[in-house]
Image (cartoon, rainbow, N blue to C red; front, side, top):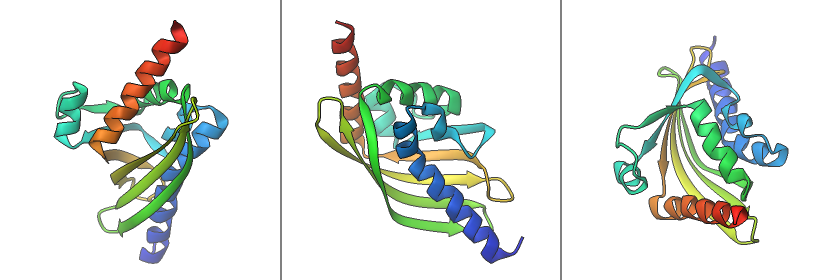
Length: 158
């Protein structure tokens, strides 16, 4: 595959991945966040301080199926409405994409929220499937996001 074609494929695959959160919200289907991934794709969360604050091991790496479950829980109370890709860098030789994104959304109680992420995506040789995701989260807002999901879930069950 020509370098320019592979670069375009990697960029398109990454862009589709970033927008999958909006698509999943619209369809109310958490599995959409795993589209375009290899069967054994894993997700690693960073920074270590975020993992510690959430009570996860620092080196936690989970399969997409576990991640989808977490997304499904969140979708009961939160909808992703817009994804801004702020920076995108493609490394054709390494089959990797790095990006910074901002995801805007709305809580079921009407409150707006915006979360920031940095991503490192590893791709299959042809650039069409993601084989590994490393996700850096803006720790305080993301921790608050998960706390609100728990609070809204508890209130819904009461």
